Amino acid sequence: MSEAAAEAELADLFRDEAMQRLDQMDTELLAIESGDGNAESVDSLFRHAHTIKGAASMLGFADIRALAHAAEDILAQVRETGVFPPDLAAPLLRATSALRAMVTGSAEPTGDLLSDLAACRAALADDQADAAAGALGGSCTAGPGGHGWLVTATLPRRTDESRAR
Amino acid sequence: MGSYVRVTVAGEAYALPVEHVLEVGELGQLRAVPGARAELLGIKSVRGQIVPVVDLGRLLGVHRAAPPGRLLVAEALGFRVGFAIDEVTGIGDLGEPEEPDEDTESGLLAGATLSDGVLVGVLDVPRMFESLDGTRR
Image (cartoon, rainbow over all chains, first blue to last red; front, side, top):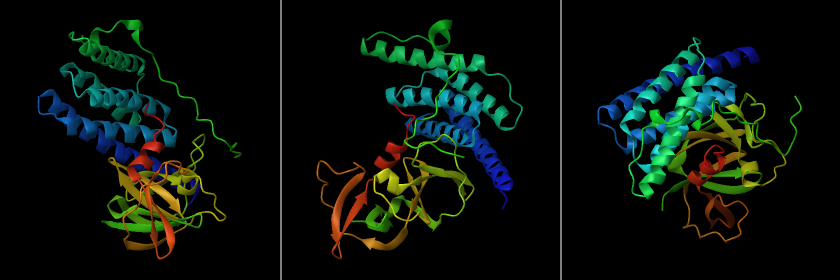
């Protein structure tokens, strides 16, 4: 197989796998939204987001990676606290829908969504701190605009050998 | 005591609990990932899924003379990772592994055991997966 054909095969594979995972994420999110979620739903959501992020990162799809990473960060926090606030399903469903558009190539700018997700994550962290102090937490949509970051940026990991290509 | 898949990596003997091993095959062609950490050799499609392939020797800090030729696909924590190894030498029971010394080289061993006079390092697969995960803080 030529290198270009192998590359195309991997991209196709990524698309199929990501679409399946996004469908499963929607199913889990809708279950959580209607009160049927449990710790396994959150674990499964986290794994799907993490796997999509990893594969996108390895294939060089930076936008998909950034959005999946933002979703993963929120889910990691939820997993840690064991609490899935009801108003969190909607922004995550927006994320899966935006990811689906990116995967199928009908991408739209996601700056707002990334900052919304960042605000959700910050609100979750505040909730965690508040819960420790015995107070009630706020909503993630109420986070102040300047609360989080707009886009994620990850520098390439420094390796101990330079990679001549 | 469960069953283990025994492998060699850089000439040294290791074993993985069989429940973590999905399949073993040729390493074959990998697609390189520019800018990735050194132990990530590339990615490969394995049964319809994109799997990262990690140089197990490098992960364990053992140096190899020849490039690895075989791929072992492992699963833990709900994720799949391919590990490049020299070869699979067998599947079967092992003696109860002894707790590793405190200063073992990698921290990725669940223990070590003598099998047919050879010291076999028993790998802690979930811990290996965790050590690969550079994104979790």
